[in-house]
Image 1 (cartoon, rainbow, N blue to C red):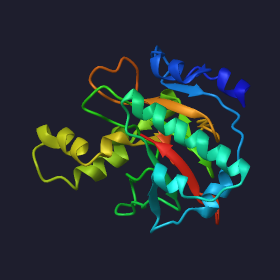
Image 2: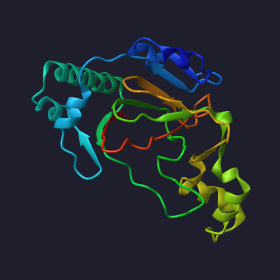
Image 3: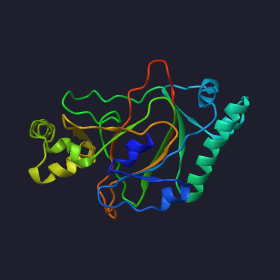
Length: 232
């Protein structure tokens, strides 16, 4: 898996947390990976957590209350350390036990849920951090392998029928309802799966960003399996 990431011009590999947060995005690079082969039993942690509805946020206290084997305790230590490092950096990490995200099926011609390829946007300089400890992992896509959905003529025409205002305000409408954040993969696109255990930093669309935001999507969950995901 390391070699696959190394061959990808979109991804820069690092070996330490300090490099993950301090390395600058440049050129076509808009994803940075701290590649890790984690030890510990993360499945044990998932099996002992309680899911409320489809997504439950798990606190450090929740983790500390679990009665775990040695392997489970090692996995817990890794998760807690990740949370603490990201918090000390100034991020707001959230550890989620996840069955599934809410699906967007309001329109049959465009989806705006996280299963659709999309980019993140922020009014301030920030990045998206994520790590899948257990379960299916997210995909990213090189920007040249996807097209913004609002630029696809058929989709744009249908979106125009939803808007009653003047043409000059149409772009603001697309932004207000987040249609412009979503992308359609090209037929020959080759997504990269982010894998389990690696801590990633993805470029976000904000005014001071020097590179294109990273196009990514949440995976379809494996049947009968919960995901354990750290994200901020």
